[in-house]
Image (cartoon, rainbow, N blue to C red):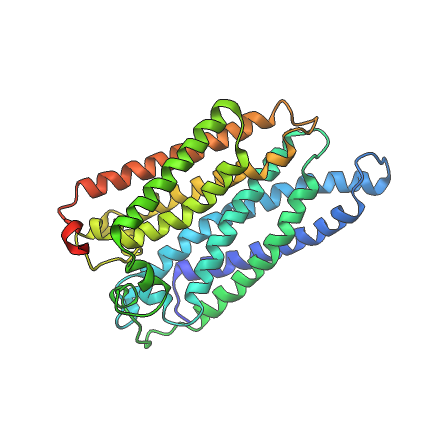
Amino acid sequence: MILHPGILALLLSSLLICTMTLWAAGFGAIILRRWDISSGSELQLALERRTYLISTIVGYFLLFQLVSLFLFIRTADGISHLFVGAMCAVGALTANPYGYPTLLLKVITFILAGLWLIVNRADTLGYDYPLIRAKYLLLALIAPLVLAENVAQWCYFLRLSPDIITSCCGTLFSQGSRGVASEIAALPSAPMQAAFCGVAVLTTAAAVRFLLDGRGGYLFAALSAIQFPVAIAAMISFISPYVYEMPSHHCPFCLLQREYGYLGYPLYGLLLTAAVAGIGVGALEPYRDRESLKRLLPALRGRLAAVALLSLFIFSVMVAWLIAGSSLDMGGYWE
C-alpha cells in the first residue's frame, strides 16, 4: 500500500459512509414494513422522531460521497508519478484490476446519492412524509453499491505498489489497442459531433418545455440520462484532441492536470450536475399530485430543471470555446 493523504482520507471516509449507509438502510427496512402515518402508536412516533435525525446524518454522508468521486480521481492522478509508464490517472487506475471498477462504482453512487438528496429534500417539504418509502427504497439500492465500492476501493489501494509497471493513456486510448476506451477513441469525429450536438439540443428543448409548462418531466429525465454518456464519449472522441491540439491524444484524464488548467474538474462537474438534476426532475414526477406537495414540488422541480439547463449550457459554451480556440484542424485527419 502507498501512503498518501488522499488515500488515507478516502479509505477512512469510505468506511464511515459505508457503515452509516448500511445502518440507515437497516432502519429503512423497518420503515418499509412498519410505517403508518395514520397510526398514533408508540412505534410510529419513535419512527417519526428517528427518521428526521437519520435522514439528516445520511444526507451529510452522501454529500461527502459526491466529493469522494473527485477526491479519488485527484488522488489517482497525484500518485501516477510513482508508477513506471504512467503519465496521468490512467496509469494509476490500470495498476491493478480494481481501479476502473472503483471509478465506475463511484460514478454510479454519485448519481444515486444525488438523487437521494433530491428525494429527501422533496420529502421534507411535505407535512406527511410523502416520499419516505421512496427514499428508503432508493437507499436500499444505494447501500450494496456503496459496500461494493468500499470493498473495491480498499482492494485497489491496498494492492498498489510503486514497483508496478503500468500503461500510459496513449496506450489505453489509442485507436490500435483493444477495449472500450480505444473503441470510443476510434469513433468518427463527424458522427460523434452530430450525436453530441443533437442530444444537447433535444435535452435543452425538453428542459425549456418543462420550465414553460411543467410537462415532459420523464422525457427530460431520459434525455438527461442519455446526455451524460454521450458527452463522455464526445470528450474522448473529439473534444480532448482539440484541447491537447493532438489528433491522436484522446485521454479524458489529462484534462484534470495543471498544464491544461484543471479543465476536467468543471467540465465533468457540470456534466454530473446536469445529469443528477435532470434525472431528479423525472424521479419526482410520480409525486406531483400528492396533496402535501402540490404547492411546493413544482418550484423544486423547476429549480432542478433550471440547474440542469444552466449546467448543460455552460458545459456546451466551454466546449465550443475550447474547440474554437484550438489550432487543431480535425477535418483532414478524419477524412
